[in-house]
Length: 190
Ligand code: NI
Image (cartoon, rainbow, N blue to C red; front, top):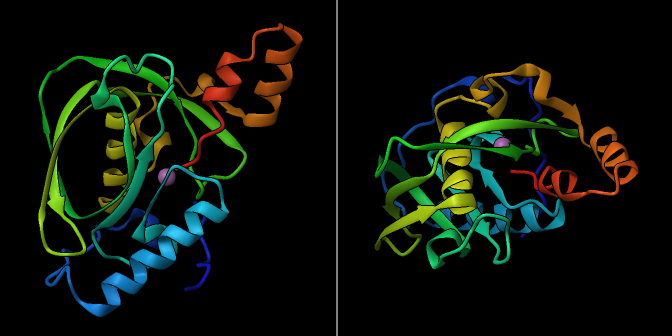
């Protein structure tokens, strides 16, 4: 196991389409996923896509912890999951705004619209099919990570760049307002 170096915005691997994985059970895929898990946990992030560690392959990991604002059902929560060759199907056209951060764009957070209900499908490292419905934060993190596989960063999805902030600036203002909900939301990095 090893900590991997995280690519930052400006590196070309982050704006390229990643390649499908032919054999999800291959040894190098398993090792990459183990290293990605170690790396995201070390960085205290909630998700990571292979291009963020300089590997242009369609592999993501993510989790949606319980107790997040707006997530009122089980579909909003998921343990740490590795997904290979993920695809997303929309279950509704409805979108919702929420704060996002990204380990490849450290120190910043922004408000991003995402579809609120999706079905996602992909392969586990054992080669089994994973298919789940997701809502709220769970749906958001999967859309964020899958976007990385198509060379899309969250800032490219923003509709209002005035809502792009330094996380510590937002936190400072929020604590001054005695209302730190927004800043807490902005702390997760994907
Ligand atoms: Ni990200």
